[in-house]
Figure 1 (cartoon, rainbow, N blue to C red):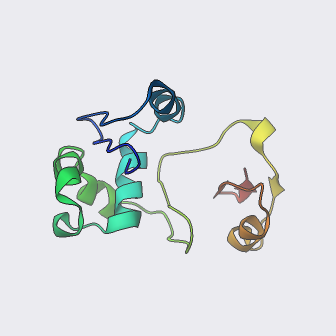
Figure 2 (cartoon, helix red, strand yellow):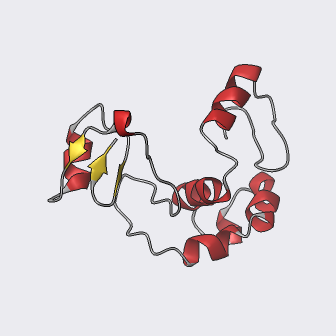
Length: 119
């Protein structure tokens, strides 16, 4: 968002066609992804959100989305409810013990989800 000045659901800013393609391919317009990212980076109060992003935060109802989440907060990760990595080819393994530490120690790991499948 910040690199190109993208304002979710409002403006592409200066995003290149390649950046727009990546944004769309990764489903960044999905409300939960945008809301949880902004809350992770800036906080969940409107006052903590940069002025340019406040209309997006408000129109997406981000404060309510994040507050209602049942996701456990894990340091170093953006907990995003409703997002699953279901592509089996992406799986790095099943780690029921300490998935966050295992994922952090593996440079190929980008995410983990219940039941602690690393991707």
